[in-house]
Image 1 (tube, one colour):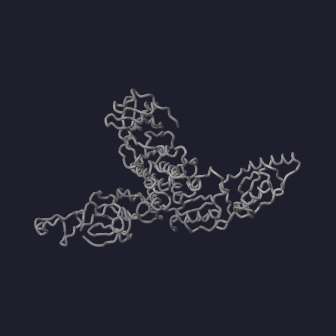
Image 2: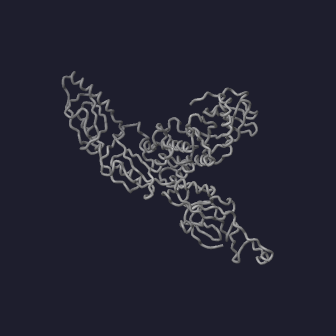
Length: 596
């Protein structure tokens, strides 16, 4: 819905502090301006509520309440809301100014083929999701995410801007966290394909526009853009875990943001083989097929010519089964300067790639300048569905595509008896014939993405897992800074995929480890050795133990790194984050190598 811009503000200044500059955008919240803050001498963004809403106390209250709530949330990937106020009739909010270019600006640069490599697109989206996840944890949403509200500065920093400050609650379609997830899926699609999605009634598949995009990325966009919100990730935190997981497992050759980041927003070149398409001869495989309607028109003109010339001409040979290039050469040998077009057709008799027939048909007489359409075989229209049940979704896609079935609809279904991603059934079933013009439905076992529980109270973490039909095993560990009762670690890590009723081990803080009070005699006996035992090792109460630092829930450890935890020294067996050594014997990620 379009909104008229606000009436000019008196002297273009609010509260004798914010000098308004150029108008940037207008939406249901109001109109955004760049502004100069006279107190801090820096540029900010000011959003002013529409004049038509200034007399609506409900709208004013909603605007100010949302501005106040947004000002309490900050983090990487977000433009901070700095304040709000009311100057006379004018209600406004002040937001940090994010310099740089929007993704829309970059994707619409003239004379360039603009799309991101998968690795870069995922990295940009992950940066935005970090800030959006902080909003969702605070029960706030953005509500209008698009490429023109995501800004990258000259240093490659990504920030989400343009927070709507007022939602029209009368529509009955207020956005929620899953709406934001949908919009982020659409942004990811746009970054990888270079074009905005046109249809929001079906899940998006970027591989339909860029075939080399990996299946995992296809499903990442597909899941986020499901029209039914119930089938999308529930919030930005869960979607971020999925994005991180795909980014970590992305095959080589799909880009590297750091390697590409030679300008504010990296882009990739046209797909291989397209650079010189407009120059020189166009190879056969790239020629645009002649439309059937054009062929019919040519036939009509041909028939008219036949009447006028009284049947003079050369008989068209039978080209069925020949290679298209050979067929073109044979037609050229007729010395009639024929115009040769290409079309595709199904054929039960001719192998794919061969000429299945012509228009006009063999034996028809043609004269100089006539057009002949070669119908190139795509193979039979009906093929047997291969047996893909029990295999992975990726293998099923490959097998179905190799059989000539290009359109595949995936339906996810809970199954406690199968690993996530296992194909449970197809429609049509294996061995039955499928029309290549129709989609094949593949039913896949649905897995459960493990959420990030760190920082949650124990009860909230348990409720979160219960809602996902996952069990919780609680263990306790001491921590110097995390309050008692809050989660400090978990296994498996966030983003892992589990089945129904699987268990997540949750480590809950028991607070700092208590030190036994020492009496005068104890002090004398200890000789004031600084907390070391008789072997000169740290007793575990300090930050180090024999020169080994204490385990921390926020740190990432590599194979071979050592930490101390609850009086023992452990060595990492691989890259580990948020997994305390107390569960080492269960997950084989830590090995106990000594004691304090």
